[in-house]
Length: 233
Image 1 (cartoon, rainbow, N blue to C red):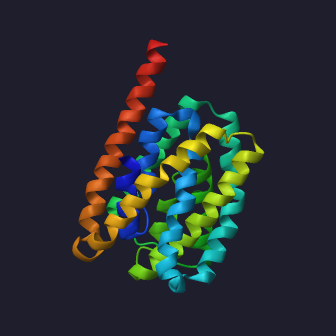
Image 2: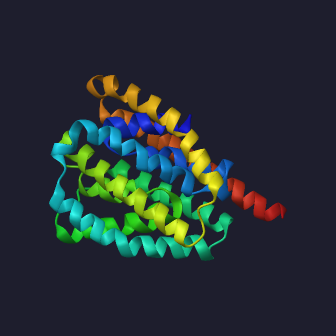
């Protein structure tokens, strides 16, 4: 359900799958994260690109990918040396930060420095937690709908491939994560199909606000669960 709802949001506004799905997936199967969600992150953009690939901002994409390379390396270090519980808290905090920034609709200038920086932050959070969309989305929030969806889709596809390769290199990509990620493609596809008609009729801001509330609640629940778990242990 989390992947289904996340796919609806990302299909409509350009991002949101990680915000919605990663907290719950981490709560249910922390040992399979972030690999499982990265499989979905790699697949969903292909459907957007099939329709809107001509609107990709290739120059901005280049800077974003350039920044993501070192960010992904740092994210991989976090995966290797930080415990599952600590990573869960990290996921929750990143979600809450992303929710707060997105809710404020910050106006970020779009230039080589900001796009590269956003790519770096996205690399860290995307590789370590599966949530890499908000930094790039904030930079592109003032772009036209087709351009932001197409550019983000290409970035997410390349980012997910990069993260999966790095996770495999550091031996943090179990076969179970690939199997679960493959199974989650089904609800992802259904969510994307639903997002098509909704894109024309629903206001993106209202949908995003509702989903961010759910994402924030999931993040808070994740923090509470881990704090209680540590206390009981």
